Image 1 (cartoon, rainbow, N blue to C red):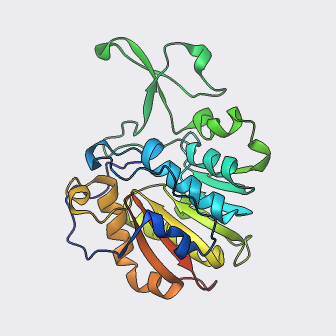
Image 2: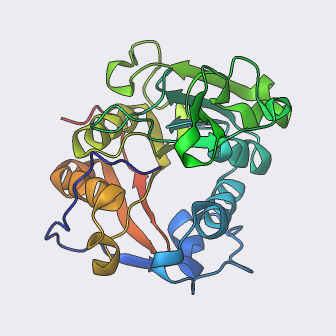
Image 3: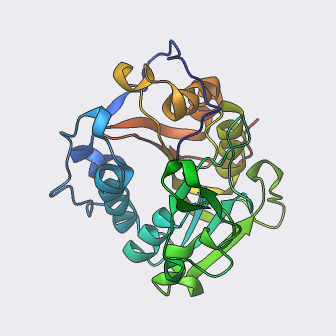
Length: 269
C-alpha cells in the first residue's frame, strides 16, 4: 500500500545492512528457504508487490511455517491469502473499516466495477465519475472489499479480521510471544508505522520474524518520497528499540522488504 500522507521528500537516512535474498536461509536458520526463481532484476520504477515482493514473502512464510501470523493492513487480502496458502498459519489482520483517504478526503484506493456481478457483498457506496469516462468506482480497501481474496479462496476459517484503526487496537488479550511472525503494511505515515511496530514486537515469540513492506533504503526509491520514505523514516526513528528487540535487522536485497528476527518478548519502550 502507498500513502499520500507519507513524506514527499527523500529523508537522509543511514542504510540498514542488506542481505541478498539468496542468503535468507542463513538468517532464518530454517534450511528450507527456496530462492529458486525469485526475481531481483526488476527496475525500481516498475516494482510490484504482487510480482516482485510476494514470491519472497511466500518463500519466507513457507520456510518458517508459522502457526499464528499478525498483519497490519489487509486491503483486499492479497498478503493474508498468500500467507494462508503457503503456511499452516491462522492470520489476524487489521484494517480501517472505512478505508484510507488522502489529505483532501478522496479515496486512497479505488477500482472500476462497471459489472456489478464482480462486486463482493456489502461493497459500499459507489462513485460515478462521468468526467473520467462514465465508469463506476468503488473503494477497494473498505466495506466488503476488505479481505475478499481470502474469502474467495475459501480460507476464512483460518482468518481473523480486526476492523479498527491499528493505533487503537487493544492488544491486552494477546499474551507475549503469541505470534510467530508479523507483517507491517498498513498506514505508511511514520507515526503509524512506529505504532504498529511497537504493538507487534511484544507479541512476537523469541526467534519470531517481523517484516515491513514498502521498506527500502535504496536512494532511487527514497527519492520518490511516498510510502518507502515514510516507512524508512519510522524504522530509523525506532533504531535503538529495534536493535534491542531484534538480533538481526536487514534489508532484503533486492526487494522492498526489511526483516527483523525477534530476540525477546518484552514490550518495546
